[in-house]
Image 1: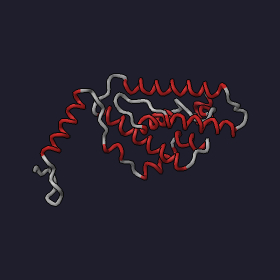
Image 2: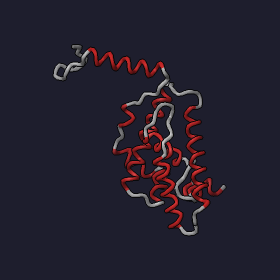
Image 3: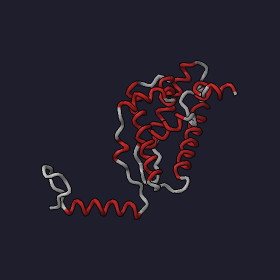
Length: 185
């Protein structure tokens, strides 16, 4: 047995260590993206502070349930942290992150247009219902980021895009949430 741990914790077997090394080596050889464990660690302070972010205001505006908003906030932070880690580690291909976001926006536009074609959006209540349905579609959409198929990565990426108003849930998201100087221009 190999002991790479404190004396009071169980030893790590040489076989387990070798299997983990082989797993990591294979992933790097084939160009797979590895998940960073630190990306999953989100502080309560970040979650509370995110209430001021545009993507959260958008969700609140269409009347999403609190637990749905909390999951979306977690997805946002996990996706942001993971994508940042990949960028820092220089494991992303040229423009890969940008192309992924463009594809998400394209899918969102197509879905929005398809839903608008048969929707009555005269009242604010109808617009909010439309927005909730569009949000839930995006939240269930799965589009892999290279070899990664985690639901939170796609959902969180949509929230990243909603935070910069590249996508939105309420049909009037641009006019409702654009900064004051953009509205005046």
